[in-house]
Amino acid sequence: MLVIGSRGSQLALWQSRFIAEKLKERGVDTRIEVIKTTGDKVLDVALSKVGTKGMFTKELEEALLEKRIDIAVHSLKDMPTEVPERLAIAAIPERADHRDCVVGKRIGELSQGARVGTSSPRRAAQLQFWRPDLVVEPVRGNVDTRLRKLDAGLYDAILLAAAGLGRLGWGERIAEVLPVSVMCPAAGQGALSIETRDDDPAFEVCAALDHGATHVAVTAERAVLAGLGGGCLLPAGAYAEFREGRLHIEAVVAAPHGKFRVTRETMADACDAERAGRALARELLDGGGAGILEALAG
Image (cartoon, rainbow, N blue to C red; front, side, top):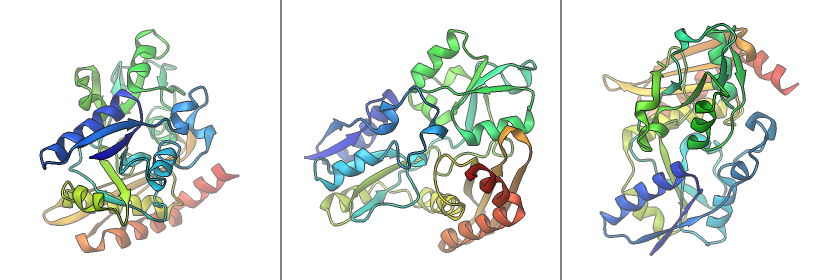
């Protein structure tokens, strides 16, 4: 029996049960072990101020290395671009919806000064590029907690990943799904990652769940993020998809408070996904992204 490590949120458990069911279809028995991560423990501080790499993955990876679990299931967008030594991404199943969405009111329906909740610097910066008149405020907690805060009137709208709402059966709460041209998603958004020890038999077992086209696309996206310096808290997004057999990659770096943004896109062959992603990151940096990131670091 394989032990699956999971965070304890509703969404994380849904994701782990989904992987468990896929493995069961292949005759593999599993059980789920809940592990609390740094990101689950620190709920009263905006993610951008916590500043811990791998805040939703570190404890799961430690459990893998200590052989307390055999598999860790992550939201890929939460994973740092560097995988620890002795660990490996065994599979990335087919991606769900990659886009961000608005719950509450559509962006165009929000009045001047309306309060929008998000703890993502990427979402905040891109939203304020289009609507600098909105007040963006941090909102922490699991998806259900955030929805309760919205329903309590603490916000006029909140920004979330469409995939998470869909997986939890709350798709009807979505007021508007935002196109990539408006809100470029986080690298790997909508995709799951199955992480194992690199020398463990679980690697080959889980590899059967890999979806090739998704894996190539998110490889390019994560290469963009790595080229920008890594970290899911950068105000940067990347999205790749196949168009007529070639990989189209687009990415953005946005300045805080919507001052300006830098966007670039490219086409590449599947075998060139990582190199193309890193090259696109260099174009973003040269086009003004470096100044944005340096100002944030300073």
